[in-house]
Image (cartoon, rainbow, N blue to C red):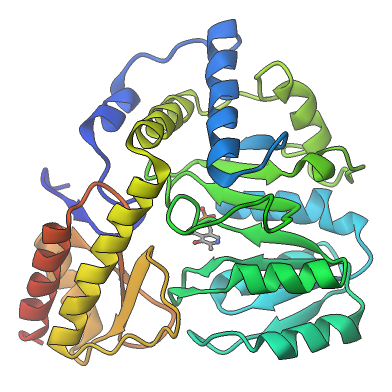
Length: 350
Ligand SMILES: *Cc1c(COP(=O)(O)O)cnc(C)c1O
């Protein structure tokens, strides 16, 4: 691997002080000191997502395992779920329901387009659902859903709301109490900008006292909640990731969450100015600040391989000739502008 690797993917460039925590000796985790770290992480996470008196279940796994655990522990206790499928990640909710033999309806929404919220409401009424599973940001396209509108519909029809905020947490505004969200999930390698391997499941105060099903031994909600009261996980936690998570949360707390989000937004804006300049089409009707997706006309495989040879990683997307650039991580507006210039010069070769 190159020394000066430039990853504009997930998690993005990670600052040295957080990277250093991964190469230190590992403290024992069954201690009051480690419990304090877990509980302080929970406190800051709940503050950032505004989930008063809620709980955070920490899993040593990636985000999909959190989706899996939500379906196994929670969705199986409901009568009729609906999945909002706006791309690869929305589709995953549906696959999980099928995996657990849960009858569910699916609301398909066209790639990168805004949802028809009137049609969504009509289908919710007609399907008599009791829980809606959706994404806040469909990362595969870069399209941001209007979570306020979705929440209002759910409130009007007493539908519980579960939101995958894996790629919008700490990037877009998301207020769990205000939106009356029962469960939100995220993972370490997106907005948190630390290595992959930690999944976080936020339970609202009301939801945390519900009766859960027991279909998933490792991520059994009740067992995890019992251990959480003493700041512990039932099984060996990814200790270093917890230390990195704690450091990240303290950095954001000191910087201010709003400032943190504004910096990411300014990078998205700068990169999109460059896309316009280079004539790259951005299909998303409501793009998130997390990634910018755009079409190029050159051979995409050659472009990606050439960039890798230059030490630069960007992502392909769910469509032919679609590229995505992440705005998470320790990069500057200027870095993003330089990146666009480098991508442009590389496309000229193919
Ligand atoms: C990345 C992502 C996931 C999957 O997370 P993994 O950590 O790769 O399992 C799920 N949903 C969304 C919206 C994502 O961006």
